[in-house]
Image (cartoon, rainbow, N blue to C red; front, side):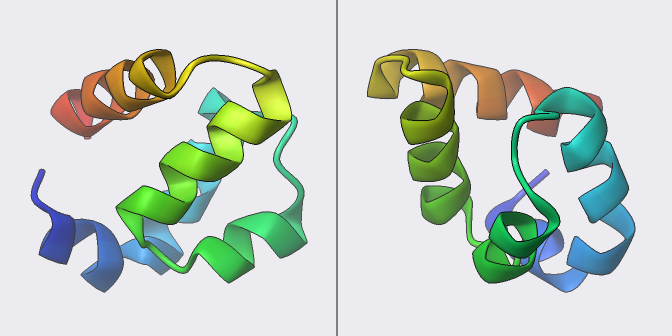
Amino acid sequence: MNRDRIEGNWKQLKGKVREQWGKLTDDEIDQIAGKREQLVGRIQETYGIARDEAERQVADWESRH
């Protein structure tokens, strides 16, 4: 999935983001608004993981959706 598809389909994808990263709040997900870099940063911060790991998780998630 490319960046444009994430932003364009964000309303449909929000539920899938909640399933994958349950610690993210609804407000955080709304603020991300489909922006990949913000999603990676928020995952990194919330889960206390390295940026590379957050990038890998998002890339894996993108390949499934």
